[in-house]
Length: 164
Length: 182
Image 1 (cartoon, rainbow over the protein chains, first blue to last red):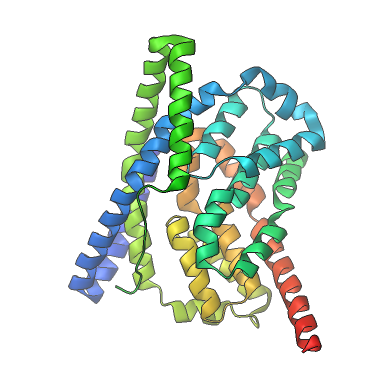
Image 2: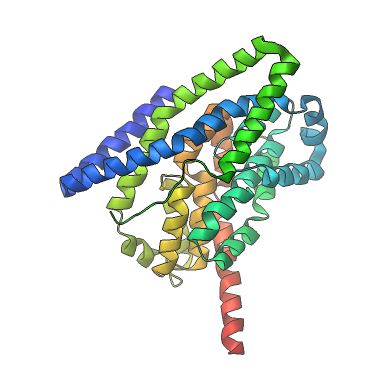
């Protein structure tokens, strides 16, 4: 699976790269330099996230997960999961690592979906560090406000369909 | 280059996660012993290695697309007069837009400045957050596997559209009220 994804991604890279070369070779060299700088700047974050996530997941109080986020917890479980998601620190992998650990530890799929969606939409560090400086704050708060029901809608759909 | 990006490799959000990670690692070491500690470390290092080519590809795609996609064109497609089609276009653009929060929010800000409306900007950001393929592939897939991620994405498909339309309605009703007051 990982290999297929790699092949696909790099096929896109080559296609786009050729399009840039066709436009201007110096532009292509500049963009390679920019991408390399971005990659190097990302490395320490990803390293911390990936290597740390396993330890963070191991620390979770596994025995509490089924009673808090189990599939039998209903709407209250969804609310707890969504609030927990919003409170989880940002960074690319921490939320996914915790959610995957919770799923293995007996959490219900709709609860885990609500958690990951709430985390993706509301993780405060991401909103404060990246979103507010780049967009007008009024639009950001509007974005947050209209996003509030979304974790519940997705979890509800998952409950009705009975998947994954 | 038209897209200057300031990014520090390490800021306070990274520091918070680093502190969490180190604390967790120390607790695991003393609670579960060095064998368990090493097992987790090797597993995570393996995941990290698998991730690197994807991240590099993501960086390249992000830079290339920013160069190839004229912002003016996008703005024409997703202005406040663009109707539900504009929200759909914004959702689609957000879903296929590669890159991280470093690229997505500046692009959304540029769209707003170039005439996109708040509803389209919200749909764009939410679509990238919930159904963006690079995010799902690079970050989510290794943790959950294809089945879970696929269903999660299917359930998320309508959400940017619903939220985008709601955002546009709220924004326009505020604008009308402000316009009436002045």
